[in-house]
Amino acid sequence: MSCTTILAGKLATNDRSTLIARTDDGFFDTKKLVVVTPDKKKKKYTSVISHLTVELPEEALSYTACPSVDPKNGVWAATGINSANVGMTATETITSNPRVLAADPPVLYKKAEKRGEKDTPGGIGEEDIVVLVLPYIRSAREGVLRLGALLEKYGTYESNGIAFNDENEVWWLETIGGHHWMAKRVPDEMVVVNPNQFGMDAFDLDDAFGRQEAHLCSADLKTFIEENALDLNQEGTFNPRDVFGSRTDMDHIYNTPRAWFMGRYLTPYSFRWDGPDADFTPESDDIPWSYVPDRKVTVEDFKYLLSSHYQGTPYDPYLAKDSGARGKYRSIGINRTGVTSICQIRSNVPDEIKGIEWIMFASTTFDAALPVYTNVKKMPAYLSEVTLDASTENFYWNSFMIGVLADHDYGTSVQMVERYQNTVMVKGRKLIRDFDREMIEKKDFTLTEKANEALAAMAKEETKQALNRLLKNSAMHMKNGYNRADN
Image (cartoon, rainbow, N blue to C red; front, side, top):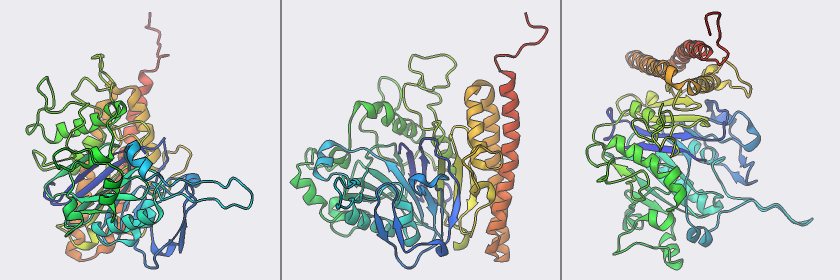
């Protein structure tokens, strides 16, 4: 799935939170936000796509999830935070190359060709990974280790990147072929950007096969590299992106421009991003995977980046006048996004309220980010009771309609959208602050569900008002807008 991921360590953020975020860019996949409690857990999990059955551990935690409303292709839980305050987002579809995929092919489902033969199950994939991992981990590192073990045992049918965060650490795992993988702890002071490519551009194999402080990988990765002559690096420098990733013309249209725009925003003073002397261009293959940002980053920065469409550059598809490059590159915010989530694990509050999930539905360019507490037994109906039919009774469809209306009248509607987005962010933050204070003072953390109801009610009202304004604006620009004074 063509998504965009951003990660931040606790010293890179304004409030010492860890942040992991991703746009889930399906093909207009209708999504909802729910809580999965342990009583709903089954003993076995069977994948719809790969027909693989996996035995599940006995003990499970509750967790939030953003599954598809239509179950025909499986759960596709996408992202969430569990009751141990561990966040996860899965998955960022990444690239590979023929050398890797030939040496360790993807594990594909094969239907029996003859009577009496059995179907061959495929490996695990984006449909399955959150369900198989998030309920059973109590730290980000545990998430890496559990997923790594599953990949080695069952394999995967696609190339993916998966992020985990807890109060102290952020980890990023990338799959390599069908059964191999590598994972790296994001340094506390760093921000990571990853747009549908194999991302890591540095990896300490000595640490991975030694103390494992910040690097983990499949047990035979060194042998796999050597036996298949995969190492392209010069002078002993190990760059996993060169070994396991891609460098194609399509990358330069679809992937690297997104990394360029995010790096340009995060480090405007540390690097040159524009002009003939630029350190990096939208088509550079060596754009860094991680940076120390020029200033601390916030949830608002994540929202801006995940909503972006190359504002302030010649590549913005919404430019009134074509620069000759308008719409040349794939935007970060696109029309077919189902859900976007920022999983925030806070360090300055009690355990019961550490987890905050900022939820956005439909095109990030036009949607609003709503924070909710994750340590709850259920989510408000406005977020969880989503139908496949368009409706003004839930956040998903209202966000979808706002995006369609605003896109068609961008020039006259963009200010309305920005006011709406800012209002939801301001009021959402205010409600979180107020409920944090009340729960801490009263030592009553059962108020999280009451808080979420208040947050959902606010979002419903503000979204309704925004939709009213945008409908009227679009009506005024209909092509059949005649009156008696027209000539």
